[in-house]
Image 1 (cartoon, rainbow, N blue to C red):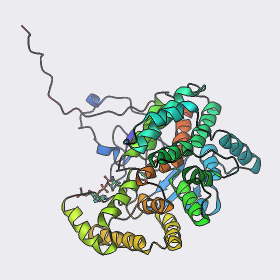
Image 2 (image 1 turned 90 degrees about the vertical axis):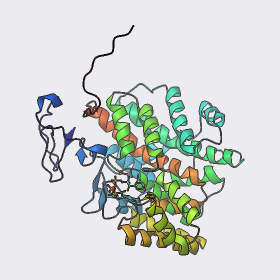
Image 3 (image 1 turned 45 degrees about the horizontal axis):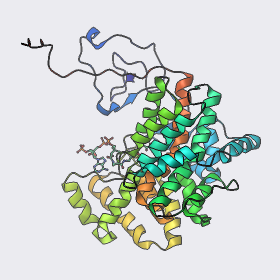
Image 4 (image 1 turned 180 degrees about the vertical axis):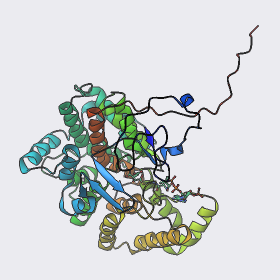
Length: 406
Ligand SMILES: CC(=O)SCCNC(=O)CCNC(=O)[C@H](O)C(C)(C)COP(=O)(O)OP(=O)(O)OC[C@H]1O[C@@H](n2cnc3c(N)ncnc32)[C@H](O)[C@@H]1OP(=O)(O)O
Ligand SMILES: O=C([O-])CC(=O)C(=O)O
């Protein structure tokens, strides 16, 4: 792992420059260096490896999937086309898309073992626990789980992506006391997801906003959950193990769990005219305001304008002026008080609420999209692997003798 100082120069143990050119790794141990080790808590500013999957550029406030601006992909491509792009590096030709569609639609049904595992879990557990467990059970039942060849990993990625809507929908429906909806093979991924969850075909405005959210959530370089997946993959562990771990990382409210936390915040505030007072109290008690801030973007999240216009359309369509006003009031107050801008979880939270999802189901929706990015990174890691194992600076007691025992 290399590290870059705030000024951009490499440290003695570094091996990469900001432009990405690499020098041979320094295999020396900290004791070989006279200087104090350069500890980067939270790996802030550390360039851990290269990736060709996506580029997050905070300076230009842009996000490219395999070179294509994400807002253009959201405007012109289906989620399935974007998934193909992330996995294979190019947008699909018609026959390639048809083959992926065939594979995805034939893997939509929930295996009996997974249904049993989901239904055995208490409805008091978090839906992300259900998804994490389901991915693990799917791995245990996958005949090719241990096959790390590119062909096997690609096929497993499609199967996993295909079945996740059935897991998420079953879980929300069982909590509501509703029967499971049978899968269909005549609907696109996003429309089918809504069909399985609600048992009816979606309004086109809802479908459009949902598909846009799926495209925007699909990939974001070395975020915490993707990095988790790559760490697991780097031990030459299997794809399902990497994704199971990534689901655990995404669950936390500093990462994917923020989308449901945003809705909890809106519920707590109640109405637009209370937003500023609520925020002052929250900041006075050092609370983190969910859906704001980002480790990489400091001038706004590149994906927010696209999701915000989908949300605006949705709120206008459903007559939710109250939610639109609350959204704007909290954003204005936060920008004025702290200068911290919304991240993607800020518009997706209310969008998923208006679509009819239960708040704890929001982060599992993120999983069904990000599984594409995670698995693209697992395959990239396996194609050019190096065990991910950083160093730590010890700050415990100095060497001492174990006391003599009687
Ligand atoms: C899809 C995604 O995962 S996007 C991220 C979703 N997460 C959230 O929305 C959770 C809320 N946000 C946060 O907790 C943070 O902004 C993070 C974790 C996303 C990024 O954290 P960091 O990179 O460590 O934040 P950063 O170093 O820029 O913080 C600078 C200052 O702003 C404060 N700050 C940053 N975000 C927030 C926030 N949402 N609410 C209040 N204060 C904040 C920090 O506490 C810090 O204050 P300090 O200097 O007084 O200690
Ligand atoms: O990149 C990050 O740290 C978090 C994020 O926005 C994402 O994973 O989509």
